[in-house]
Image (tube, rainbow, N blue to C red; front, side):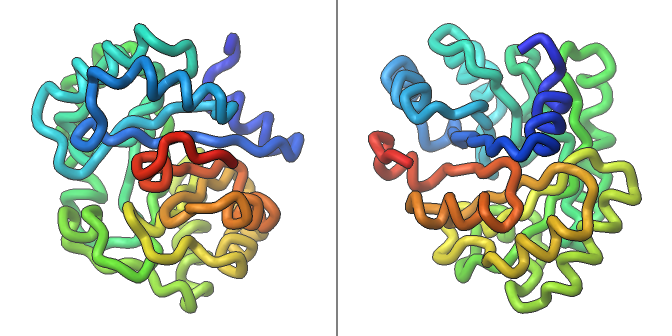
Length: 238
């Protein structure tokens, strides 16, 4: 991948090419099994591996990603729950702002705490607007961030939040139903957000079947992220 990861995603979005990322949580994934796991990810023809979690202990991410990179050439993108989950062994970082919440810790404080590391980092930093949508369960993100998700029915608020993120200079918008969501982000909401933004759209959380994956793509998702379904059955095929 000669172009930057962001450029790759942007170009795919313009062409209508759909992308897939598998999310690995270092807190739930055995380092000893990474060779086997990455082989299964590559068979799914995923474009990226996302790495992150809400409760990952300090320094675990660094070793996890270093080991992961020994077993795959797929780009590894950090999807951190905390500034301590940063490592230069990855290729890029989703520099997240939790736009759907009003907790300053996840709007700007965590980002400021990451600056001493990022100033000297080799990571490609991708500004990303992160919007939590109610997936029918209290996800770990909600517990950690102490914020409320946007209702699946409140399409107007989700759209306005996404547009505000774009106006603030975010390069990606990420609609997330949360880890282990009972239901994924619904089609109407995905479609409405996609219609009103001019940047690529990521959708994740609660996607467990090929039908749900294709539905997200059909309604405007440029990149779909699958985590729990892969964790529970990493031979799962889309």
